[in-house]
Length: 202
Image (cartoon, rainbow, N blue to C red):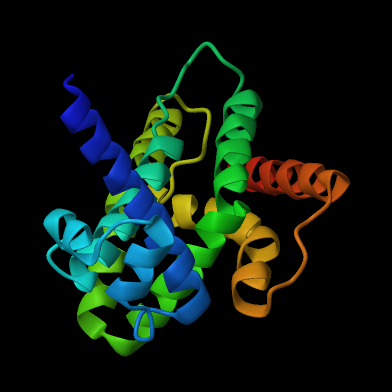
């Protein structure tokens, strides 16, 4: 890779990092490309060379959030591994993502934009469904293996995620509640797995 390409990639990363800070502090409407370029220590022209508009820049940041979510939900059912162990791993990954401060901050901003635009909200719901597809397939495989009761796998996915988000995502995103302690984290994950298996396990 040539030094010019490496430098360009570095500048792009700095612009994205600066934009995240600007969006979180000012909100999308009040954030400006001028302030983003100043934060990134690059010219405004350099910013526009990488991103044609503030909307484009914001969309790329949101896309990176979805990619992080997709990586977390990239799970494959293993018939030889205890169900509890697999669910615990899924819950740990979900929890770590949902309680990440940068992730919560950007999701708070994104949810605000969803409230303003039905188009953004519709796209978000579609992405959430697509993102959960891996866990959905995991549920379906566990049902086919007769380890879980035959039920609506899509409902099960959202129900399991809800057990975690109710205590370790929504209070922080909506009300800036403090993050759970390590002891509370263990309790949240363990109880979510216990409740889920208590109802659905064969």
